[in-house]
Picture (cartoon, rainbow, N blue to C red):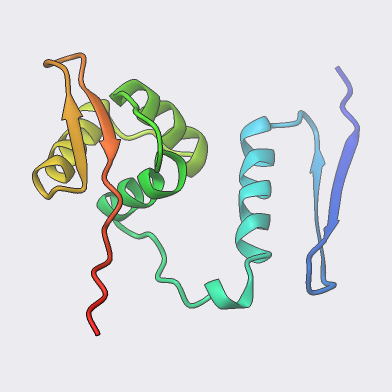
Length: 130
């Protein structure tokens, strides 16, 4: 089967152009990574000083705050979104351990029973004293 050359090009908010070329069979995983990279390149200047998410713990907390900040979720829900968001797949048992630690720290609440837990993010309350 003969494949064509595919060129994807976009212009970022600062006016710079970014593109990539696929020669051969298109790989959807590489295309998804490209679009994730574009999001990083096109970040607002105010967010460019944010520390990168280097540890799994940081990634888990970030994903909960961004994607699950107002909804109840299960380990399976979290695993599916984690794989899509970070393009990597840690073991479910590892993610379950981190979710348990976040429950112990008061970052999440957990309901249900083993194997059927449901989690909910607890938004921090800011106490302003003057």
